Image (cartoon, rainbow, N blue to C red; front, side, top):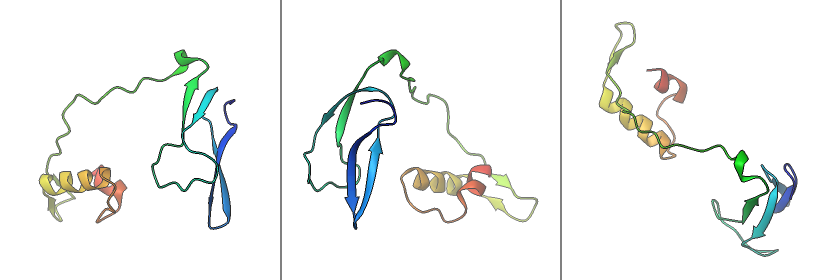
Length: 105
């Protein structure tokens, strides 16, 4: 498969959605045509044509501690509450407030 080329098509409610390869390589499908698939299910594996082009993802090794902040004297936000909200967002739950403002705090 070439980069940008569709390697599988998913159908939901009579809509067909192509899934495109983000890099060139050889596709090995894990599911056959007509299979019922769920969210997050592996559909195939891509053996890259040029593995040297892969961007390495490094684990975060620093501290991720939030400090209590004040929003102009109106109210102080508890750091434990902020950390809890950020953790819930990272876990995929809907935030209690706008995510951008939580991150800015």
